[in-house]
Image (cartoon, rainbow, N blue to C red; front, side):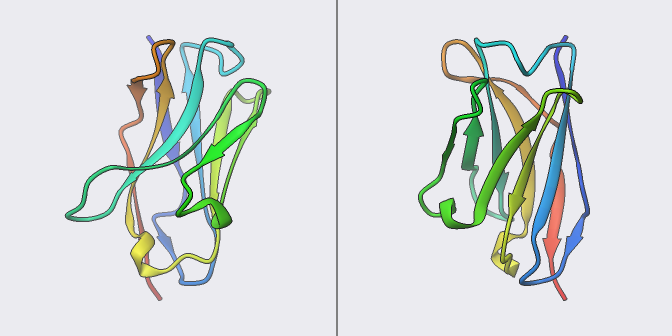
Length: 119
Protein backbone atom coordinates (compact mmCIF):
# COMPACT_ATOMS: atom_id res chain seq x y z
CA UNK A 1 0.00 0.00 0.00
CA UNK A 2 1.48 3.31 -1.10
CA UNK A 3 1.33 6.07 1.47
CA UNK A 4 2.21 9.74 1.10
CA UNK A 5 2.82 12.08 4.03
CA UNK A 6 3.28 15.84 3.78
CA UNK A 7 5.41 17.70 6.30
CA UNK A 8 6.53 21.26 6.80
CA UNK A 9 5.79 24.41 8.76
CA UNK A 10 2.16 25.30 9.28
CA UNK A 11 2.84 29.04 9.41
CA UNK A 12 4.90 31.07 6.97
CA UNK A 13 5.42 34.82 6.95
CA UNK A 14 4.60 36.89 3.86
CA UNK A 15 7.45 37.21 1.35
CA UNK A 16 9.14 34.07 2.69
CA UNK A 17 9.49 30.72 0.94
CA UNK A 18 7.09 27.90 1.75
CA UNK A 19 8.85 24.52 1.83
CA UNK A 20 7.03 21.19 2.08
CA UNK A 21 8.18 17.59 1.78
CA UNK A 22 6.20 14.53 0.79
CA UNK A 23 7.56 11.24 2.12
CA UNK A 24 6.53 8.21 0.09
CA UNK A 25 6.32 4.70 1.52
CA UNK A 26 5.20 1.41 0.02
CA UNK A 27 6.55 2.32 -3.40
CA UNK A 28 9.55 3.92 -5.03
CA UNK A 29 9.48 7.40 -6.53
CA UNK A 30 11.93 6.08 -9.14
CA UNK A 31 9.24 3.86 -10.70
CA UNK A 32 8.97 5.10 -14.27
CA UNK A 33 5.21 4.53 -14.48
CA UNK A 34 4.44 7.40 -12.14
CA UNK A 35 4.85 11.12 -11.62
CA UNK A 36 4.44 13.08 -8.42
CA UNK A 37 2.36 16.20 -7.94
CA UNK A 38 1.55 19.00 -5.54
CA UNK A 39 -2.03 20.27 -5.32
CA UNK A 40 -3.54 22.82 -2.98
CA UNK A 41 -6.97 23.95 -1.83
CA UNK A 42 -7.42 27.49 -0.53
CA UNK A 43 -10.21 27.99 1.99
CA UNK A 44 -13.60 28.00 0.33
CA UNK A 45 -12.13 27.21 -3.09
CA UNK A 46 -11.51 24.18 -5.26
CA UNK A 47 -8.40 22.14 -5.81
CA UNK A 48 -5.56 23.85 -7.65
CA UNK A 49 -2.87 21.84 -9.41
CA UNK A 50 0.55 23.34 -8.76
CA UNK A 51 2.96 21.12 -10.64
CA UNK A 52 4.52 17.73 -10.98
CA UNK A 53 7.86 15.99 -11.30
CA UNK A 54 8.52 12.89 -13.37
CA UNK A 55 11.06 10.14 -12.84
CA UNK A 56 13.48 11.79 -15.27
CA UNK A 57 13.31 14.87 -13.04
CA UNK A 58 11.44 16.84 -15.68
CA UNK A 59 8.97 19.28 -14.16
CA UNK A 60 5.78 20.98 -15.23
CA UNK A 61 4.15 23.83 -13.37
CA UNK A 62 0.89 25.70 -13.34
CA UNK A 63 1.37 28.82 -15.50
CA UNK A 64 -0.03 31.01 -12.74
CA UNK A 65 2.54 29.71 -10.22
CA UNK A 66 5.47 28.84 -12.46
CA UNK A 67 7.60 31.84 -11.57
CA UNK A 68 7.42 31.01 -7.83
CA UNK A 69 7.32 27.21 -7.76
CA UNK A 70 9.99 24.54 -7.68
CA UNK A 71 9.49 20.79 -7.25
CA UNK A 72 12.40 18.44 -6.67
CA UNK A 73 13.08 14.84 -5.66
CA UNK A 74 15.41 13.12 -3.21
CA UNK A 75 15.57 9.52 -4.34
CA UNK A 76 17.83 8.53 -1.43
CA UNK A 77 15.01 9.46 0.96
CA UNK A 78 12.16 8.47 -1.37
CA UNK A 79 10.57 11.88 -1.07
CA UNK A 80 9.81 14.94 -3.14
CA UNK A 81 9.53 18.55 -2.18
CA UNK A 82 7.76 21.80 -2.98
CA UNK A 83 9.11 25.28 -2.67
CA UNK A 84 6.87 28.30 -3.23
CA UNK A 85 8.62 31.64 -2.99
CA UNK A 86 7.38 35.13 -2.18
CA UNK A 87 4.25 33.87 -0.49
CA UNK A 88 1.27 36.08 0.31
CA UNK A 89 -1.85 35.40 2.40
CA UNK A 90 -3.48 34.19 -0.85
CA UNK A 91 -1.19 31.17 -0.66
CA UNK A 92 -2.92 30.03 2.51
CA UNK A 93 -4.28 26.58 1.73
CA UNK A 94 -4.26 22.90 2.49
CA UNK A 95 -1.39 21.45 0.48
CA UNK A 96 -1.55 17.90 -0.82
CA UNK A 97 0.97 15.65 -2.49
CA UNK A 98 -0.28 12.96 -4.83
CA UNK A 99 0.91 10.25 -7.16
CA UNK A 100 -0.01 10.45 -10.81
CA UNK A 101 -0.93 6.92 -11.84
CA UNK A 102 -0.21 5.13 -15.08
CA UNK A 103 -3.53 6.31 -16.59
CA UNK A 104 -2.84 9.95 -15.69
CA UNK A 105 -5.17 10.21 -12.71
CA UNK A 106 -4.24 10.64 -9.08
CA UNK A 107 -4.27 7.24 -7.43
CA UNK A 108 -2.73 8.05 -4.04
CA UNK A 109 -2.93 11.22 -1.96
CA UNK A 110 -1.40 12.48 1.22
CA UNK A 111 -3.73 13.58 3.99
CA UNK A 112 -2.91 17.22 3.37
CA UNK A 113 -1.21 19.83 5.49
CA UNK A 114 -2.54 23.27 6.38
CA UNK A 115 -0.23 26.16 5.60
CA UNK A 116 -1.17 29.65 6.72
CA UNK A 117 0.64 32.72 5.45
CA UNK A 118 0.47 35.44 8.05
CA UNK A 119 2.71 37.87 9.83
